[in-house]
Each structure stands twice: as structure tokens, then as C-alpha cells.
Length: 146
Image (cartoon, rainbow, N blue to C red):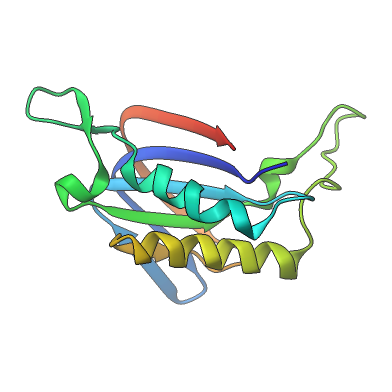
């Protein structure tokens, strides 16, 4: 398995957990899920792929620029429910999601790798209830399973 990402191009996005709020303007909102068998070794390549992904609009409205090209930002939020399995009934099973401590390590490593590449990154609050507000641009939504 490899991490699952839901990447959405946004005009703005915010996450609130308790009294703490993080927000971004133009950029990418990323839901990050880690599953059993995911390895830290695959994250640098994944982060580089996301950082260089040309999904931002150029002057002609074409998806031709990366977030860094427009001085945009990333908002990365952990999301174990990306590994929900409803094949056995109506109640989702999360047995394929990575254990919390290991998933948090991969999530934080992914965020650090984006920052090493020069990205401006804001994050949610791992393992906590969060309120999200997302103003989609497009909409452009990309699913990634590496």
C-alpha cells in the first residue's frame, strides 16, 4: 500500500481544532491518509510529486503552474477515514488504516518534506476533531495512491 491523498485546488481553506485555527489562500488542500504497509521511504518522492504538480491556473486559465509558481500554500490535514472499507456492510471499517502513532510519524514526515522543498505549509491537528472550511477552485480534485 501507499499513502492516499485527496488533493483539492482552493481559493482559501481553513482548519479549526479547539481554539487553534490555520488558514491558507490560493493553493492546495490535502487530506493525507496512511494505511497498513505504508513506508517512510516513499514519502520524499510523493512530496516532490505533489510540490511540482501543475494544477494551478496560468494567465490563460490552463492548469500549467505549480503551487510554488504562484506563491501559493498547502494545508495538509490527516484523514484516516480515507481507508474506510464498506464492503462488509453499512458501517465503515478502518482496519486498513495505519496505527495512530505510525500514521502521525508519516504525516509529519510528509509535511516536513514539503517544507524542505520550499513549500509554505499549514496543518491540521493530528488525531483531533477538526472543523474544515474549503473554498474549492475549479473544482479541481485529484486522488493519489502511490
